[in-house]
Every structure is written in structure tokens, then in C-alpha cells.
Length: 274
Figure 1 (cartoon, helix red, strand yellow):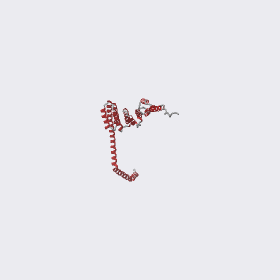
Figure 2 (cartoon, one colour):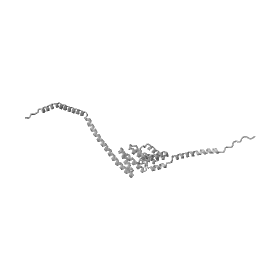
Figure 3 (cartoon, helix red, strand yellow):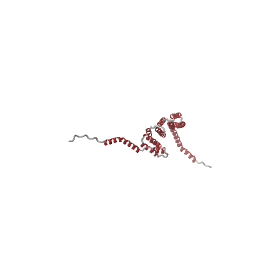
Figure 4 (tube, helix red, strand yellow):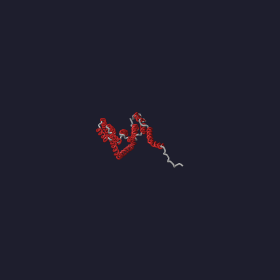
């Protein structure tokens, strides 16, 4: 006859009694944690939800902002292509209308600045140099890319040289410090100084243009060298000035020599001799 061993039952009962207190403690601990979580959520839940909503709204707004910028850039690009077509065809009225549209409705795009360059070129093609100068001055007055600003400055210098306003060119280009445009600016400065008769500064400017270290030169070196060779030598200029000064002194010297070589007047006769 089989005997049931009692120790497993005793062991199970003892184990349950041993773990009973632990189960109760665990249940109480979980309940406390839930209560703490409810209290924390009641205090900070609205802030978290508001932060999530603001974050999602900001992301949506940022994406919309970028989409609007891209759409404006595409529209401005199409308008600029239309402007270029008018410039090529010489349609000044239509070109002015498109340039005005770009300046008013797409002022924050690079195409608004580029339209000034294109319109100034068309003005020069039609011998309206002052309109070209005014348009380029407008480009310099807006907050455009530095590269476009320097291009506009150099083109304005060309217009001013055409108008024989050499001193304005010197004032305009005096503060260009971009290595990419330095050689072109120095050539224009050389032309301006030559027009002013300041041949020493003209030679210095041409030499700086020729010494441009850029791997691909931005100036026609042969043309600049020709301008430099054609300059009157500074020594010759000084000699001409000395000759002019000497020529002015010659009449005074000749007059002095004539007075020295003139015969003296006879002295008055004295009394009768004894």
C-alpha cells in the first residue's frame, strides 16, 4: 500500500505562508506607484500635452515655411527667365515691368537682385547710361548677396568710367576687399587714375591686377599690360614739370643778364682844370 508523503504539502503550505506577506507588500507597492503616477500626471500631464502639440505645430509650420520659400523661389525663377527673354529681345517696357514685379513681390529672393543687373545691361544697350547707373545704385542699396553686390559695383564702375566720372569710381572701389574681384577692381581703378592724370597710382593699380594670384585670371592680362605700357613714365612727367618751371624762370634770368651787360652811363664831368 502506497503512502502519501506529507512533506510536499507541508512545504507548499509553508511556502504560501512565507510569500503571503510578500504578495501583500508587492500589491501595496504597486498601488502606491499607481497613485504617484496619477498625481504626477495630474500635475504635469497638461504641460506635456501642450509641449507635444506645440512641437507638432512648429514642425508643421516649419515645413510650410520651407514649402512657401521653395514656391516663391520657383515663381521668381520663372519671372527672371521671362525678364532675360525681354532683355535679349530688347523689350525695355516689358523688362521694366517684370523687374518691378520681382522687386515688389520677390524682394527676398536672389532673382530680385539679379534683375537689376539684367535691366542695367539693357539700359546700356539702349544708350541710357544714367538709367543703368541708377538701377545699379538700387542694387547696392538692397541687402543682396555679397557676390552680387560686388558684381553690381564693378558694373557701376564701368558705367561711371563711360560717363568720365573717374573720382566716383575711385570712391566706389576703394573698399572692395574680396580676392575674387580684386583684379577687376584694380583694373577699373587703374583706368580711373589714368583719367585723373594720376599715373603713379594708375601704374600701381595695373601692377596689382597683373599680380593677381588666382589660378584663372579674371582680367585680360595682355590688355592690362598694354594699358600699363601706355602710361607716361612718372620720371617723364616730373621732367616735363621741371621744364615748364624752367621755362617760366627764363625770362627773368634773361632780363637780369641784359641789365648786367648794358654799358654804364658816363660819369658827370668835374670842374675846369687848373
